[in-house]
Image 1 (cartoon, one colour):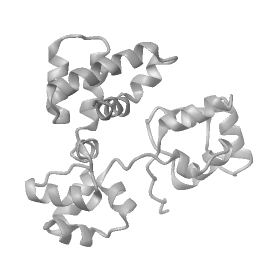
Image 2 (cartoon, one colour):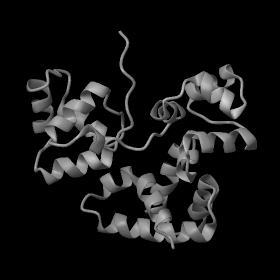
Image 3 (cartoon, helix red, strand yellow):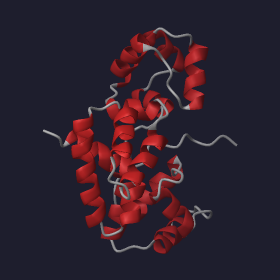
Image 4 (cartoon, one colour):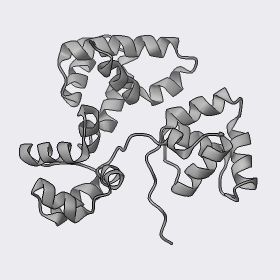
Length: 213
């Protein structure tokens, strides 16, 4: 059976809204089963969504928003993949390929593999077409998971090695990275749940980068 594409999902927002309402994963899952007819939803699944282990589908997102007394838009995160960006902009693969000067099959292959490998000119065209910032480009280039791992390492290591690796992976000036990592570590130390904070380390990192004057 065809399943609706999973929309972009803001896991941190879901966790924040749920805890602000004083609801546990068990209560959310129970409500989604009984009020929305989604019998497969378990507390473990709700927790998996919040830990970014997998995203909710379209129907699940709508039901989750209903349980959290918010709009689905409040739980919609930034697009992460080439496909999510394309769908968010309403383009067909053929339109994207024509706009960036690539063969449509070559573009579709990268979309299916979730890794952008275009050269300088197609990359600039893609950035304009999808309105990608640096964080978006890192994600669609397949470096999100590596950046997440490196950032988690910086919580236990203060050496120059992880910082240099982060700068290379994020394509940022080392001075910008050093300031962002100091803010990231401070946030991790002060977080009520450091593990949840660490699971969203990439998002917190880019927030720190954007906060640089």
